[in-house]
Length: 347
Image (tube, rainbow, N blue to C red; front, side, top):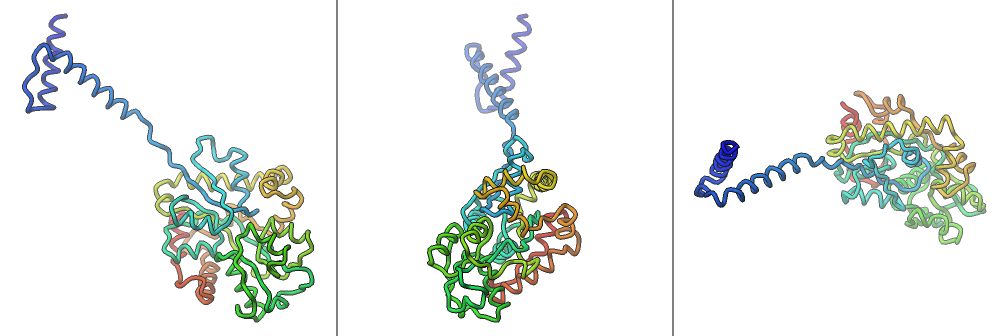
């Protein structure tokens, strides 16, 4: 046994001399302290090596739109999993969502295609990873009672959210009515103020969407323009910061898979799904189902065609939309949308 302890002392001395060659060899009295120091260092190294790596968290920003609700349905049904690696962050407007993305507060965002093009034109690093929905009547221009068509809004006050979507809807409505921006008086309004501004008479018309559309129509307003008149042009997409998508592809795929699971649940259990989503939108279940009639949700196969391959079908409409946005001075240059579709989907 004494030979064993002598061997341990020699080993400790050798380790200390190797680690600190400038120090004199320890004497017998300092050897217990040296052994304790080695034990402590070894314990700390083992503890550090056993500490798990922090899990990445994908924070996705949204505002209140029926087309974004399947994300919240997926969370409610537990499709994101229990490890909290996907967080949904709700903002009061798409303007706030865009600012949060630009300020690196979130790494994912639910945006309209024109809002996405606007961010790309500003140099944002993002990938389009999912086509969430296509508006086919869900985005509208509503006017006060007594107005029967958009042309009657000449010299009237039109409220809209000062985002790419609001500006784009206004530009397209003016174009189809053979009118110019000088023919109306635009009034910038956050989406949360659309309803009160129109009902109070602060504006004569407002560019809005569900659930505000349903409440305002119930109050007697008139619908004078909607997105079904510009089919395929108002598209909602999920974008993820390019570096995040590149570093955490499995997490991005988990979001996509959860989305399609939620769409499957909506198809199989329409009423229970609508009840869950309507509660968040603060409207009745039947009203929410009516709101969904103006929204198309591309399935997996449709998403594949729209985003994947050498000629994704979303590319053409996106390029035409970008050209129109440049012509109407909504962006100052054509952004590189093509690579942002292919790169996100493994091409």
